[in-house]
Length: 218
Image (cartoon, rainbow, N blue to C red):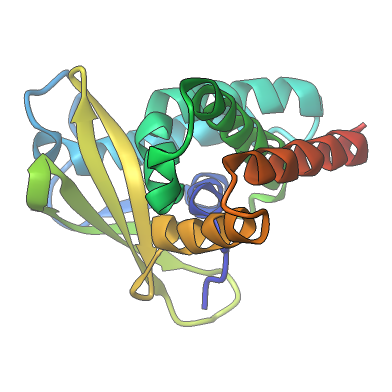
């Protein structure tokens, strides 16, 4: 069972451990721009894995360089603005523009600091592309099968992709019927509620988490 309680934790898991892509449906093609996410969402996920493996898995790479390369991939492949709005739940309406801007930056920083180091542990796990299906609101679901190298049964993971300004972006990942956006929203909303319903409580929590991660990586 894959147990990573954070949306981009699983993203990092896939990118760091998911090379060796096997496409059941069709040969790999070029990755040009398209009008709708469903046109090439599967190729987008496969290409993203290839890029990550090529840029991030060298064990001799300095951690700071790896982190900045991962940051570029996060910005290019995730719709962080969309995710930030969703994981705040009802409190997104209470957040000021300044709080939303800081939250978005803190969320990205947490993603980068927490998960970039995972790429050092790549050991050849396989990812098989199963299918792509159009969903609601012009999103596309990309289903993949993750084959471990220890003999454990494969796990099915569904990636939800939509288009932003002509580019595919990941907005959620569903593992064993659990949405990572929903999981993260439950955690963040709980932090805000404990802080009296103030978004600042979550911002402070993320500031502290990021500071601890920065110290542990130094």
